[in-house]
Length: 628
Image (cartoon, rainbow, N blue to C red; front, top):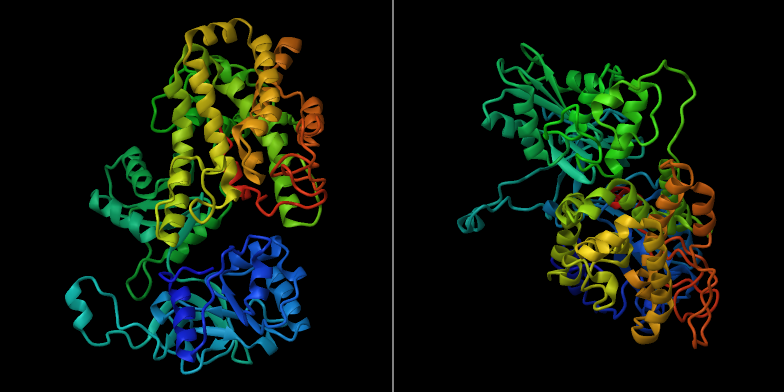
């Protein structure tokens, strides 16, 4: 469960070797339904993992199995949800076992503190006390020990497991110990029992769109560009307070975008003649952070300004349209909210209107605001996926709706480029979204010590490989989304197909829908890969094509470009699985409906059993990658 090149995994290995214990290498991973049975047969006495390992075990039904030899389990490597921790604590306590929650750092050989199992109840948010032979204490900004309980300070640790230091070159390995006390960087408090709890992070970091961003690194990038600035941020935006005169905001933003990888809406530039300093002479970042936390005044902004911010650094003029600029569904959400605030209400089809004409549609403000049905469905779909997989309520349809919205968004935002055969313009937003997915694949590759080629080439959902040689199936939506866009681009690269689709978009779409529905049921007869079949394009393509057809059906019917919500929702509720069974198959569809599979079943599985391979896409990833 833990790779040995990971410090916690190596610590587990070494501690077992030191104790003369044996190590068992399971055939199945923690997410597999057979994992618990394998542990029972191997008579394992302890299991160690990171919080995600326990999430997978819980989803796979680990606690339903009786493991009489299991004496304890340990968790470290991140913050564990208290509800999940309490679940495993009670499970082990009921079976005469112990649950160890630990806290550590690579620089201290992975383990620093733990909560004694007997005192874990009611202290799930604590990191506990130092391990045997170690010592924890708190220090203020000047490094002086804090003796008063309840006062926050930087957590510091000392013990025989602290590293010698950082080796930047081979000769550094020959040096003596350079680190006596390890300054961890976390801000903690100590209660009256001597238990420590983490309350914050001393390092100046933000986490935006899944990216961990160092404020100091952005400051350094600005300094190298000749711009003096202090940088602060939260988990929504980064602010650079610039003191260098005669430097253009656009120049500052360009450096910030390059250093952070963030788009323009997450970045702000402020101006000051000088920066407030502390008595120590250091910049008073706390005052800048307070400014960042203050409610932002809604600045008056005309239509051109809103579009320039959204499409920065592209040049935007009055004759441009949202569609012409290459807008996608995420930018549509962002601009819809901004424009409605500025214009009072949004005209139908505003995404195809020149900006000059759009600006002249402003009307008196009123308190009655309309909400685009696509935005409502998008939010509801993500909520359904979360509820379905985070609770015991089997509410289907979430992922089905998201796939249908992919097709609907292609029709709404990209149809003109597709009809013109401009596939590169359609692929541009896809490439931007996959750039966010690339670090996930790289992280799994590093953790597993091999390049996960199926996931690199976005084919992990096709059944040519299985974990651990690809990223977990929970990322199937990303690969299916990319494959769907590529199929559309390939189809519209054929001139005759473009002409037919342009002349008869609804009729040609219905014809394609019929073919896709047939492919859904006939493909397993010639290409069957088991449970993962539900993640493949033949199994879901009909949903995207249905979304494409619904756009043209609704536009043709009433001239509007809103989403026909009742029809959409009615189809998605059962996930489109109400059509039946694979011809010639004696196996039933699984009756446990899943919004990740958008169906009642997993192929050829016993009735009523939910497949262990069925995993939903995390909400953040869902919202990032559902763009067209």
